[in-house]
Image (cartoon, rainbow, N blue to C red; front, top):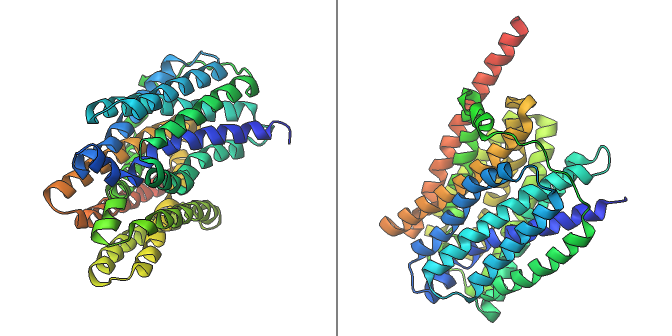
Length: 393
């Protein structure tokens, strides 16, 4: 279909910047050794990236709302490339943190702008699927980008990953400049209007589900590589393959979540997915404690990834139904909440590793998902009350 390849190009760009975010979790142990820092300090690189992405992206998008979209996308990719150059060449932990901060600014702007362009250049009636394709590029970065990054780090050193991202980013800038049509910006939506929705109790509960679900996931996922190597006793040579299996399970889970929501509804899919998510984290803890075999560990990891990401598309739809007339703003708030939750999860995980034990991250992650589950029950009750009131009127 005419123009479809441009959507896939935007998805590839989304994959590229997504890899820059997720890759740290796959090479945490190597960064720790290379920079002579603790695993906890290395984990805070995830916190910093996610926090800056969450807080600054809405501000940047508000300030650049009127800017032509293709130009903004190319400029943002330029910032992303410069940040990766700095990450590749600058020595020391402090300068690497600064490079990651700049990388987050570029990445956040790239993803949101790519979504905006995809919606505007999509064929008639295909806007939703075009946006989904761009989002899928970001998701696939965890599936393919993280294990490939682990392989590259093993072969060429972990900094080589950022060198590869520089080359890919430069190529993407050139292709985007010539391939993507000029697209007008929009009238800016004031941040005050966006934040005004937070006065609604149902909105707060909806975003709380995202925060605690993904935060609980992030507590464990951020430290997954050192957890598998140190606590589970997985061999280094098997780690890349395990991370790939983990990622594939997340993609299948995401697809199933969308299918299940359409077929059985939000509540069964959301609550069922989070119950299995909690069970998988508990099972992982118990299995690691009582077996030396890595096969059941991999099976439980795949169950964890499948159930965790089955919640993703369901929760997106869940938020839209809370304020259907403000669906764009709700999804924007959800994106920021997702990044804040990942930052919080990585930070809490670091405290657990530092003050308690690396082996306990799965328990703490499960607690976060339990809170998300409770929030979903409360929200469901309020949605039922709203529906009942509407029927009465």
